[in-house]
Amino acid sequence: MEEQFKRQHGARHRQFQVEDDVYVKDYRHQKPTWTAGRILRRQGSTTYTVRVGDLTWIHHAEQIRPSSSMTVVYKLLDAFDMPSFTNNHDKDSPP
Image (cartoon, rainbow, N blue to C red; front, side, top):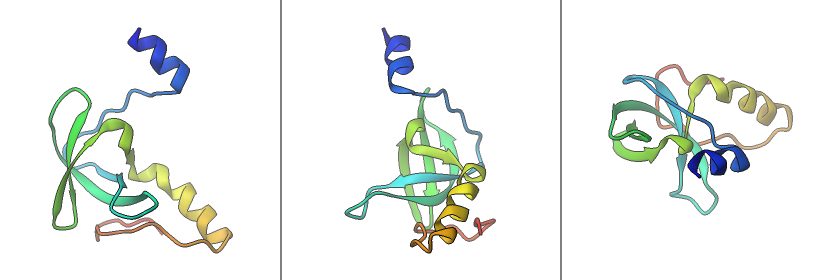
């Protein structure tokens, strides 16, 4: 039943390693954005502890994206002169 749900809703198997640079869904604003962070540890089969600036967040893998996957998004935002995402992580920030 779980596999059927994943197929119908487009869920993907995501796995991250400690120290991976990632983007996590940031729900602190009225409209959720993506914020840069770094994986600190894996908590469960699909839950990770992520360092975001001075904060530590716990997020499900479906709310985390590899930092490399966001490069295309930033190029599109620049092309359409749209505001960028919040970035609290200094190292290797996307353009």
